Image (cartoon, rainbow, N blue to C red):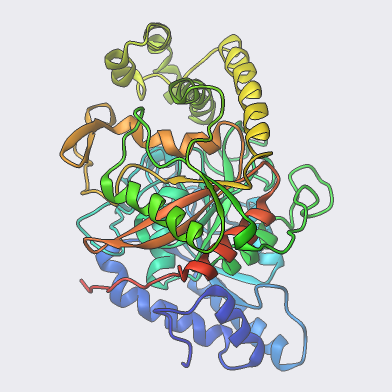
Length: 492
């Protein structure tokens, strides 16, 4: 096969399929061979429908040979995160209670991929109920980082990001409420988009429970890939099934051409609420300096009017409400008794009690949510005002590059080493929440490596500017020569 799966992008592969340089079945076999060799060391792809995928690949090859025009994905074999229901293929969300759940319908994003002539052959690993910054569970075990198997792949789209980085799948769809697309992209050296909330249908994602139809607050579906063009291609496929029943993609205006020299860029490189490592800070400031060098206007001091501590507080309150709604009733019920303790701790600023309770109680009543939502709406206006002065804001994805696996300690007892200082694990949510809480789009781009591990930054834009944000990120990557670099894969 002429396509180099170490370096090829999704866009490259679709173009090669269209030109007849490779066939869908040939590409599927090459990816499966690659999985046989390298997946045991990372455990990214955990469930398969090879027979169904092979039949679809042969049909795509036959259609192409007869001169039929295939959809935008052109018969490309793909994996998808094991939180999306896939008809006839087990979907567990990492939960033993759903270990035997075989859906009878596809999630909306899966329908979009299939209607675009994507071929789904496997599922990628996640944490239990997609609720951790590391991807491990009692159904499929631990997923390891593509660059260093001793380190985390991130969560909850850890398997998805590793699959893209390793070339098992050249595109993926993750989901994100606390950085679950962005952090794994950052940890594994790939690109990821958290879209504006509401742009892509979330129906068919687990959690909530299989069959639930309501759209939850904060949570989004979004693509991962090896280039901005890959994200654009996957975004269009995901938008085929509109969550509100309107025209596909109607909520997302088309992008205008981007001149990097004319960009106005806000920079948020560090924060006392969640201090970052020197390497992380340097990645952000380094991009800012290079953008300044090609003519962009840099503003290192611009911020929303609400303090960073209050931004994190609002996000945390909303997040607990959503997580409680998403969890199965029998799990949620066991947490109710702790709600008053958590609320009291939040109100009193008691961080010790707050951190101790944050994963034991994710339930808020509707009054709590309404108060937090009103605060959120004011912050949304602050961000809108901020984006009158800058086009985008660049910032860290989280405090550090990928850290060592830490799965034995309970969530509330874990810490993250930030340049020798042990910081609370919950702080991993801070940088993700800055875009999640006000429902803004954010794209992660790789910026290089430090000590053999990838680093990325996130670029945040105004709500509904997803296409413009991608165009801006693409122009930045082109100007600064930032692109996907493959990891050195190991067997075993």
